[in-house]
Length: 196
Image (tube, rainbow, N blue to C red; front, side, top):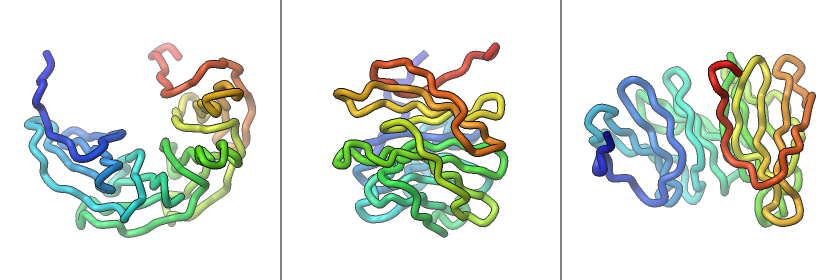
C-alpha cells in the first residue's frame, strides 16, 4: 500500500539514501539534506550543506553522508553525529551521481550544461583520507553510477541533442575504462537484476 502523506519534503527534493532507521533526502533548492524517521516519516533534522551548492545526490557510508554539490564542483562530507559538514573536496565540473566500492567513492562529473558537458569524467575518491585518487574521462554527461562484478557502470545521458547516451564500463581494479555500450537514446539510472 502507499502512504500518500508519509513525509513533507523541502524545496526541490532530489535523490536519497537510507538505512534501517533513517531516510536522507537531498533538497537542491534548500541546499540541505533532510533526515527522516523511516518508520513514521517524521522529520528528525535538517542538515545544511553549503550556500548555493545545489546538492544533487547523497550516499550514506559508515558514520558519514557524502553529498555532491552540482553548482560548486565539490563533494561534501557530513558527519552524522554532529550534523555538520566536516570536509569538502574539489572534484570535476557539475558533479551528480555517487557510488561506492570498498574504500573508494566514485563521483559522476557531468561537465555542466553550460559547457555542453565538455570534460565529462568520474572522480575516484579515497574514503580513508578523503583525497582524490584519479579522474577518469568518460562519455558525455555521466549522471548515474552502479557497481556490479568489480566494474563501475556509468550511465552517460549525452547532451540532449546531437550526442546520444552510452554506458561506459570501468574496471575498478585498474581504474580505467574497458568498454562502451552504444545504447543511444537519453539514458538515466541503472539497475541490475539478481542474475546479472
